Amino acid sequence: MPGNETQRTPVSGRLPASMAAPPDPSVAAEWTYKRLVAYIVQFERNLDAEHEVAGRMVSFGTTVQFHIVDVGYWNPDIITFDGVDQSGNLMKLIQHVSQLNVLLIAARKLQPEA
Image: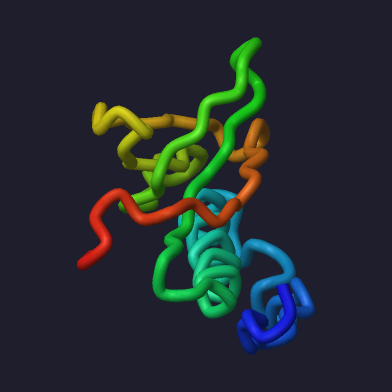
């Protein structure tokens, strides 16, 4: 709608060259975690006050969407996502770094004051 445009910061999708390759295979999850967080921060900068970062996982036969609350890792190969679905149910996704696919989406905040 004209007049309702939100100013957005262009996001190149590129991370610093220093994050291009893991320095050591034993810290692959930590390296992946740091890059994920950088992408999430870039994505979040473009959201208005009514939206927050959510994820959509599509490898479960159906689409699962949830509000991402936290991201973590366990070296050498596990990434975790903690979140809440649209019904308020707590969720935790545990994913091997080799299987990682995350679609970041903008979702209306569950709690507007958050």
